[in-house]
Length: 221
Image 1 (cartoon, rainbow, N blue to C red):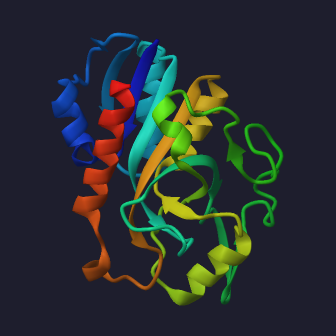
Image 2 (cartoon, helix red, strand yellow; image 1 turned 180 degrees about the vertical axis):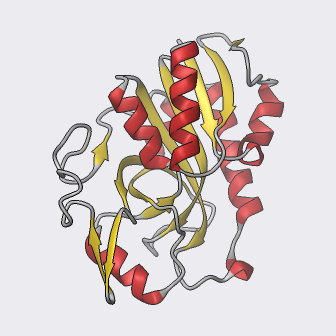
């Protein structure tokens, strides 16, 4: 089985890359699979482009997207590692005064057009490694403008009530994989809460450490 491990930044995967001596341009063989990593750069455009190029050049059997994320759900703990099972497009739409109209409300997309269902891209079976069985399953939303305003956060919760975390790449990964019929898993570590921008409360280094500890455990099992 060929596994493509991808993240928006190399820093998010650095310890895993070093531990397994992973390469970005060729697969490395392990006991039960082959694996390489890909840095897509942040955002949906970069992610979709680089993943589609990878699939065109050498189709993987599984894509694992890993990275940090902000928690919309305050019950999630900082540095907690979660398994993302669905994604929505959190800021695809238009502002109407203080309100937000999502893309389906504007007639720009049908909420049930493949690979969407009720406005979400879901994955039915995305725990290919035993280590993932104990992870909490979460619903994600993907944004290109990280939320940091009380009104916009309220609108996000109202528009996407299931969303528990936000990232800048998740929906792009799920979209590309579903369109190409490739198995996918998304693993995120919580680095901050989605609130008014407060960098002093962010725990990015420790969240990255938690993420890599889990990835090393997962790929070693």
